[in-house]
Length: 244
Image 1 (cartoon, rainbow, N blue to C red):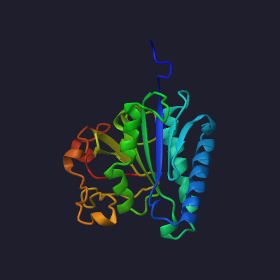
Image 2: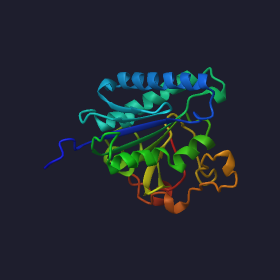
Image 3: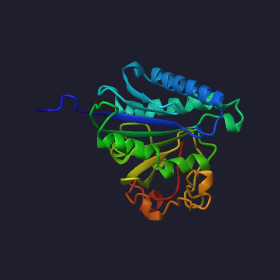
Image 4: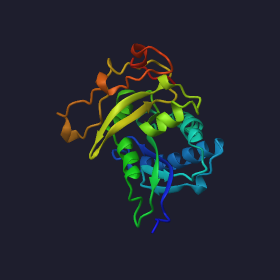
């Protein structure tokens, strides 16, 4: 018998950097700003957050969007607007009080369960969200307010296929090895217009204080896509550049 709960939708996961080490009053404030920023970003781009199925965890949210919420609008307009909301909030904040987010986007199978989504694609978005490259980029580049990781499927079907205003040279294809997941994600820093050389400045993950001897996660050349980007020469396509 067919599973009536089976469907395909867009997953969007967000997580606040540094939440666990923040005092309770700041945690509460960050929660408020997180929800307000997500709501405003959705409203400004014509998305209906009231229809999103959301799992909230204090410093994080995993949302499954209705099938009629366009993927390109979420990847492009919503993400840009979210970054603008965060940047506006952070303007008058001291560095340690700024709200900075990781975000992961994946499209796949959704199956409802008694305590979440018992399906592989729900795991994929969580692994991308918790990946060392995504954590490391916010640690190493404090100018970034929002770090986004698209799954390979979303990148190729939405960005590379030309359904957004985003350029392919704004992304870097990185290997993700997180628990049982091994795959690729496409990293983007919306709002950052400066050239970022990933080879000169390797991505370093966030470590616990007890793990000070851990080695940094260094982006190797073979982890960057060797595909030709919109007709550019391969050498140009694999340079460490992220645009805004």
